[in-house]
Length: 432
Ligand code: PMP
Image 1 (cartoon, protein in one colour):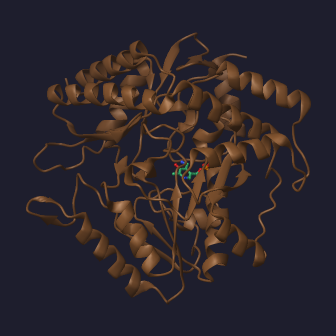
Image 2: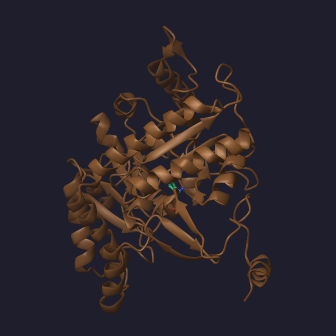
């Protein structure tokens, strides 16, 4: 059919699941760092699909893994085991510090956080879940109750016992000491809020090491260790959600490794399946054993499915063999330097931040006031798209002042530089 027919059918039959419009292109194909539309236009993919195509699109090893698994071992009864599942669990444990060695494989990020929250509740006997006010953990019941980075309006009361605390934001500190971000004071303040709101039933603090959807906000070095201490003091668990940051994207296998902290529960999703639906909850023997004794249940349809597990195993192998943690660090430095260079020429760029190949730009009306340039990001992303670069805005409804850049780890230097050139052109057009 024609493009007009495509859009007419789309509008007649699709439920709109977000406030923004669908991207104005019919995507026919995706390969490597590009997606191709129905006019044959190549569009650089600086969102890695939905932050998941970690190894680019149609990576040959993944294609082969899907083909082989689909033809030999696709899907099984939830309590039936196969080698790909056990192999991936062992491979993941091999990438993690002890005591993180017990693994459950699921399909989506929301689901993995749902499961981790259930485990924290069973383990502690508490039910209260604390999260940052710019968090994103999913749209399932418990994961959305701990999600404050997008609008919560219209769905009625969420789970009782959810506590929200301010996000430490180095670009916009709440507290300063000697002119510098005093995140320790902010952490104390956050826990004063927790202690005031809690009814004495704390189960867990759930956090992203870099709050990606909340604005690519990297928790200050040292924060996670101090946070873990505060949790331990209260007998609550620390759940880290590495949906976007896990599996080498930030230049380490896991973002928490920079801080030398080990979470009680770790969730992985997006990057683990490199584009296929696969997620994991990972914890210690001790937490797993107590949850099991207390009747832990999470028997979903696709738990321990062999096909996505085989893909996950391939992802871990490709990352390990290719030394992609170092690759992400090198390319991330190149991207970050390129963005800092753009900052010298475009005064709407207030801040450039991020780690490895997860970078963000915050637009401001001027660098002194740091007032968010609310519509600017949308104009820039539209201009970029017209020039052949897809990237996205991460911010609250009503503001488009923060852009995220997260290309696949397989991107070439030339593709990365081309993306920066397009962004430079777009910034020139939009301000000029
Ligand atoms: N956690 C984080 C940190 C995420 O970014 C996302 C997705 N944006 C989720 C959880 C939810 O994952 P899913 O959409 O696969 O449920």
